[in-house]
Structures are given as structure tokens and as C-alpha cells.
Image 1 (cartoon, rainbow, N blue to C red):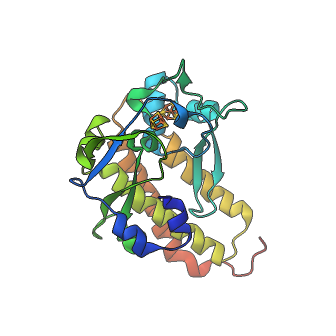
Image 2 (image 1 turned 135 degrees about the vertical axis):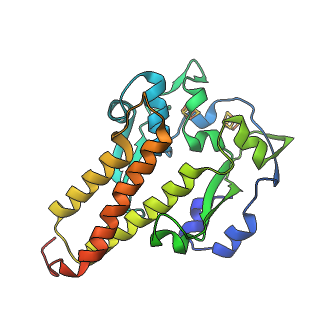
Length: 250
Ligand code: SF4
Ligand code: SF4
């Protein structure tokens, strides 16, 4: 099943039927063929991925992004997205060394979860703020065409393999925050603010979301602070939104 296609086509009922909880079972056994690390051009990093890789490689988050990724404004999310840049004509992941993942213990969440994907439900409430509205993580099998069906796993066991918390505060906060930021940029666009203004917002979002971390300290408290800062920015925009000059050239 191709989640992206279902989302793009708005087939929400079909998506809901496929959603899995922590105790849901699925059949999958990795054959360790390494194919998913080649011809691979779809890996997005979240803030925690970049932080963990930076810490492991003793680099700064900015150095990791400069070395292994590219950043652009997501056409759907409307906020800065950090995308892994594969290498060579075979589009090999830069972390694949001698057929093995060289950052296995801190590989990006999308790699660690595969063949599962993760979504939040109650997405319509996400833009309303960082707290209060209940959101919950759900899981689904993504399109695999690989591995074997020889092993029965539960979602819970699968998360434990890579130490992904069952109640993943980071993921829920990340989902709320990125939805809020999406709403903020949409509002700015509706007010036709200039590209220069949008670039200032995007720059602030990018730095706060991905770069401004001390890798010798714990990630989550720093991410909570980043989320508060960006949430205040969103609230500020919501409060002064009507003061933006409508019709400013873009
Ligand atoms: S990060 Fe590791 S698991 Fe993910 S694509 Fe690269 S080499 Fe493969
Ligand atoms: S996840 Fe699939 S493609 Fe990747 S190594 Fe395992 S079997 Fe191969």
C-alpha cells in the first residue's frame, strides 16, 4: 500500500481502515539485502534524527545537514524540509558503508520504522496549539515489495528494536508544531506578504527547528524550548495578522 498515494488522493477512509495500534500484528522479516539504501531519494530527517546523527558523528547539526542533506520549502508542508541527498548514479544513501548502515543505532526514524509508517490522528486539531487537543500516533504498513512474511511482529516490538518510545512525546509535539507552522505560513501567504518576509520566517523556523541545539545536552528539553519559541511566533502572527498590508507584492 502506498500511503503517499492514498493521502494525495484523499482516500481517508481507506487510510483509516489500515491504521494499526501498538498491539497490531504484521508479517515482515528483513532479508538484509540493502536495496532500500540504494535508489533511495525519499528520506526526510526530523530534528531528532539530525541531532542524533550529529552527536554520533561529533558534528554540529548544521554540518550534518551541509554534508548529507539539502533543504527546501515543502510544497505541502510549506515549511523547511531536510532531505537526505543520495550519492552516485545508483542514488546510494551516504551512510551506507560496506553494505551496512554506518549509523545503525541512530538511523533516521523513517528507516528505523520501515516497513511501518507513522501518522497522527485528529490532524484537524493540530493547528490549534501545542497542548490540550488530544492527538495519538497510529501506524500503517507502507508499500514494501521486499523482505519475507516469515516473522510475525507487533508494532510495539518493532518500536522497541530502535528504542522509539511508545508514547513518543517528540513525535506528537513535532506533529503539532509543524501543523501550526504550516497554518502560520498559509496565513502569511493569504496576506500576500513579500518573499523577503517569508524568507525571514523560513530562516527562523529552520534554525530553531534543526540547528540551535547543543549536542552535549539532552535533546527533548531543547526541543520543547524550540517548540515554545516557534509557538509564540505563530501566536504573534495570529494576533497581528489583520495588520499585514494586503496586496503587498510577492
Ligand atoms: S540511513 Fe542507514 S538504513 Fe537509512 S537508507 Fe541510509 S544506510 Fe540505509
Ligand atoms: S527492508 Fe527490505 S529492501 Fe531493505 S534490507 Fe530489508 S529486505 Fe532489503
